Amino acid sequence: MKVVAGIDIGGTKCAVSFAHMREREIEFLDKVRMETDRECFDNAMRQFIGIMADKLREHPDWRLMSIGISCGGPLDAERGLIMAPPNLPRWDHADVFTPLNKTFGVPVMIQNDADACALAEWSMGAGRGSKNMIFLTFGTGMGAGLILNNELYSGSCGLAGEVGHIRLEDDGPYGYGKNGSFEGFCSGGGIASLGRMKALDAIRAGNPPLFCQREDQLDTISGKTIADALHAGDPLAAEIYDIVGRYLGRGLAVLIDILNPQVIVIGSIYGRQKDVLDKEMYRVLEREALAASRKACRIVPASLGEMIGDYAAISVGIKAYHDLYERGSFQFYDRVGTRTTEVCAG
Image (cartoon, rainbow, N blue to C red):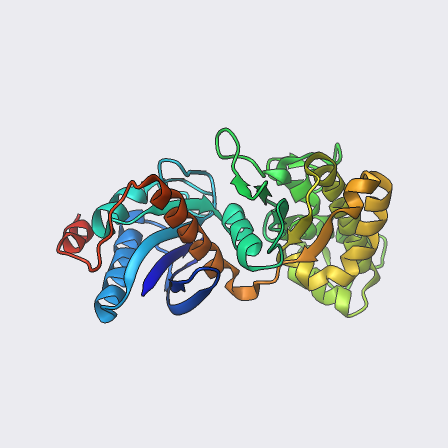
């Protein structure tokens, strides 16, 4: 049985998934979750290798074809290095290729989480069948994965898709190193920042919102508390989401005009608040985007749900298999040898 392994690396949790690779579909076979060892990459890698080695011994009919890794950036994807991402600052220049290649002898590929999710939604989710697709994370931050002409586009140094850095206003909520950025307006952190600014004004005017009654509660504001207040009928929360919808429309108009995609798939917050965001988003798009490009593009929520991280890592593994198999630059190991122990002990 042809099996692909996927490692989804998060700031607090990791998961190793195994899927049966078929011609057009995958079947998830198993998954092991663990806490992320934020302090020591080597320990985390020993865990990943141990899990995969154990599963291959338990299932002698599994033939490991490739390994895909999804992790927040920055990365050097070509050399297989994790470059101290914000949520894993001690994982600096962490080499994922060498130990996995030496142990299993199969293709290994790493992509940042936005690119990995783009691959997943394009091949198995809401963007399936499209030629040109943009995936937007719209979660804690705002990043993009770009599928252009049926290929993942990474750019000259792997930084394509950093749309959260686009400045939409001279001033505004802070995100991705600047005030008024796309991420500042359209992310969980940006919504919370906007909420604190608006709540402070409302409290001082004697009209506190549901999500913050006093100034000493400002630090408790989050995207979730504002969303809860929105659904409880709080007018300031509704105003905040109208602002977010407007700037989402403005950011999308830039992407539509430049890249002319068939579909934009938006994750996380958009899927939960689509009905609220769409009104202002589409109103701005009507005004800002080229009419022909706007009409050619569908805007849809991500469809892979809570398993998108698993799909993302597996999708990277499938890409690794196809890309490197075509180059004929690797060999397969049907079972794990003694080198597993040697790598874990290093």
